[in-house]
Image (cartoon, rainbow, N blue to C red):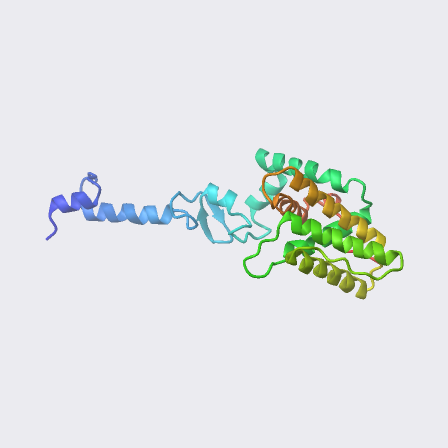
Length: 247
């Protein structure tokens, strides 16, 4: 037989409604709390229906884990709303990112901008060996060496310029391999125009180094911009230009 004092302690010293045993009232409270808690953090109440998790999650997890830890479907109303009406802090960050990138790409033609982002898709996928991190300096070295190799080739001289760091060497080879693959598919890419795009990447990475702070500031900036660029547009007229280079 359960003593009343023990039941009262388990129930948090709550006074149950008249006619309802304390154990039953306490069990109902536990079940209700478990049902209403966010399945992502387990702490806050679930207030938004999440089609990915098929449960109600809290607004904080919805806002901070969207497309990061939670694979949201494109039909999620909260995802659509966030893209159409980004929070003020997000919009301000986007404006700052574009302003930071603009000096290094303002002189590029549309094709050169396509090549710029195409090269950055290789950088985004690059994984250094072992515990080595890819730094802005590695990106600047790789882009500069790849551009110099192409500039030399455009003058009729075949010479491969080699960057100093090992990650930069591997990245430069990956960029060259991407160009060869795209060309093998029939796209016409001139050495001079891709060299200009790569010089823009080198410039952006060098400028980020001059600003000080993080040694991956440029990579972080481009990761945010590439994520924004990959988002579906709200309508056809707002779609970004394709990253594919057409013959």
